[in-house]
Amino acid sequence: VLIGFTITIALFVILQGWARLPATALAAASATALWITTPQAQVYWSPSGEVYLKTGGPAYSQLPFLEADALGPLRLENTIPGSACTRARCLYELDEGETVLLLNANASISCAEIASVDIALSADDLQCPNAIPWSQIEQRGGAKIRLTDSGRHITHPPRCSPRPWRQCP
Image (cartoon, rainbow, N blue to C red; front, side):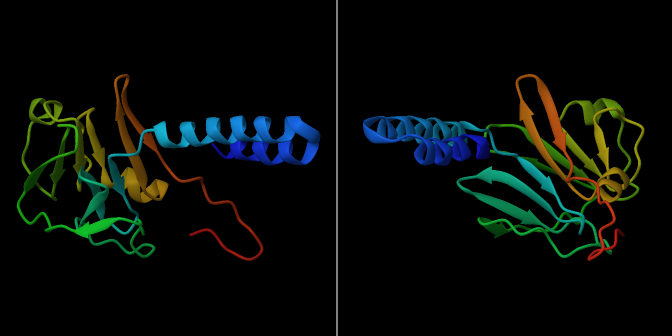
């Protein structure tokens, strides 16, 4: 998307005469269409332990899940406070019918039960292939989770590299 807008600016600067306006308008329209049609993540799990779910409308539900000694909570533009998951397990339904299961520490559950949901976020290191453990999220600095027809896609923030003005944790 950013490359599309960069191309738009480059075309505007490079082209002259009558070709400038149609070429930049076409490039801008293409970049805007790509931006609008790019799927959003359904779940964010921040390094502070909070979970953000896309449960309806334009806003994300902000759920306190784990207490972590990390960065401050993730900031999203459209959030509404949700209720904390205080039971051993809590099941949530997302916009398009997908299900997210939050598993607190020491929750007893089988891998077959976890396989029946789309996304399972676990406070413990469960040995189930479908569960996403907190240790992975904490180690990688958070996660953005998106479900598509081809499966579950997890994106982590870039790894920290030492810089003179900021040390890595």
